[in-house]
Image 1 (cartoon, rainbow, N blue to C red):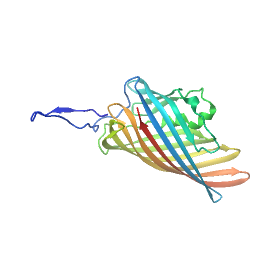
Image 2: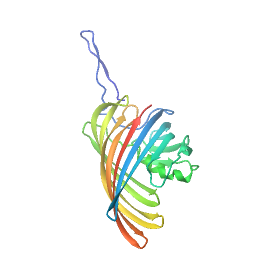
Image 3: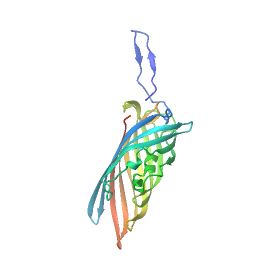
Length: 275
């Protein structure tokens, strides 16, 4: 929601409101303590892997609904409480029917700088081990887009790097993501005046571990692109969409055999501010 300038023009009795503009402003996270917003996050993963010449396909869909509440708004950081009320995941191999209800109502607390750099994430320690597959710390370390140091203008670009260590189904992974943002201009999104921002990302990953007694190491990378929106005067992320493609090679030692398995993952993610 950009700052509005109202200009009175003498003549013909007209009072004219100029269009809202966010260009020339500095983008920062903020708001009023206690302020809450609800988001929907949907994600689709389409994975294809080739084992001994045979292609195997996996399709996973997930849905998250959660509310963010500002606990503290200080000169150099904000603290955000995230509470989920609905999470589902369909298609995860070998997982059966997943129940995430133990997460509902349990706060995840994120501390981030005003430009979006995350300094701390506290995940409830009472959650059952099966909810580890949600990888809440990695999810919310990458949720808030990085903002530029300087005030923005149309065409302005900036970069942000996120490095995370995570465990995915027994594989310890290091993931590096470099995002390049480009400010496009003012737009209307989710009922707000917003800054429209294009995102291009480069991703690199490597990992190793054990699955069902099989030693696995993998490496790969890919690219992504998308569009996000930010409320300049309200200091909040409004959502957007992004897609990426990652190609990996997994080296597997199983049953006395050495296998090289190419894997291609296509992911699309959409985040909507609904309240």
